[in-house]
Length: 84
Image (tube, rainbow, N blue to C red):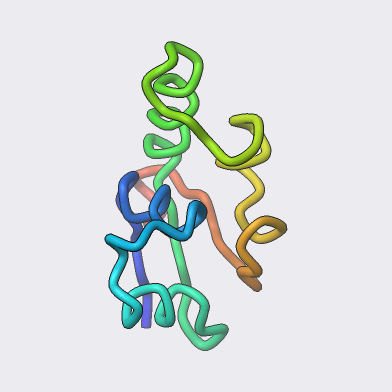
């Protein structure tokens, strides 16, 4: 299955937010699924963090651009709109 995460789902996932349903978290972690994150979501999260509207568990570049190291994802692709 291919999953395109929007910004808030991605942020809930990397921060282990309880609002994220366990079924969805399991689907994101499932190595059989292709998980995608829009480059616009990365940009949005970094900008919000820089202006103080988004606390992140680690510095923005690490939290947003390296989710595999933080959340145990085996493969997440950041993509432009035309490639997802």
